[in-house]
Length: 271
Image (cartoon, rainbow, N blue to C red; front, side, top):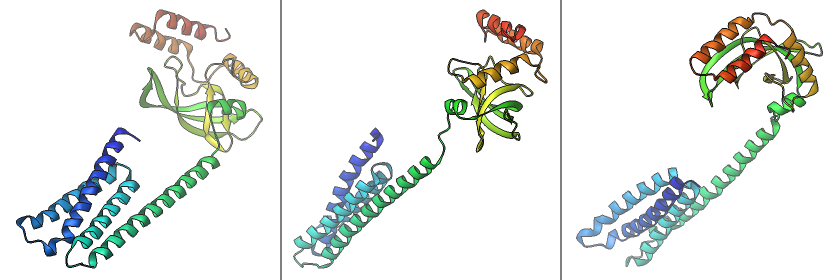
C-alpha cells in the first residue's frame, strides 16, 4: 500500500470513530438541554465528510466498514444512554452494521470476480515477446512501407511507428502490420528497406525486425538477414545515409568511433 493510501486510511479510521461519536450525540438531542446540544450535528457532518473523502483515497472497503460500524455503534450506545429509551437508535444501529457488512461482502466478491476476469483475459492472450517471435514466430521478409515519428525517445534512441509488409519465406500470402518500436538512432529503418523478421500469423502487428544479428538470433533468421544485406534495397541510397551520419557526427550526436563503424557498414555491407 502506498504512503498516501496509508495516511488516508488512518485519517479515515479516525474520522469514522469521530462520526460514531457524532451519531451518539445525535441520539441524545431529544434529551439534551444545554447550549452545546447542536454541536453533535456539526461533529457528525464534518467527520462523515472527512471519512468519505478518505475512503476515496485509502482502503475503500476497510473504511466503509469502519464508518458503518462506527455509526452503528454510536447509534446503539446513544439509544442505551437515552433516558427515554428511543428504539429508533437500535434500528439505525442494526441497519448500519448490516449495511456495512453487505458493502464489504459485495465489494470483496466483486474484487474477486474482476480479478478472475482479468486473469482469464490475460491467460487467453498469447505471450508474445521479441524472443518468442524470433524462435517460434513465422519468418518473413519485412518491407518498410512507412515510418513515422512518435516524439518519444529512450536513452537517446527514438521510438518510431513502423508499417511493414510481411512476406512469409514459406510462400504464404503477404500481410501488413503496424506497431511502435524502439530503434537505434544509428539504424533507423526507412521506407523501402527490407529486413528479416519474425511475426505471429494470428497477430500481424506482433513482429520483430532483425536490425542486427546476435548470438541469440536463430539460424534461419540469421541466414535471411545475411541474404538481404547482399541484395539491393529499393529506395536505399548508401551515400545519402552516409551524409546523414556525417551530419550527426558534425552535430556531436555521433562520436568519431561510431561514425567510422557505421561508415564501414555502409561501404562494405557484407563485412
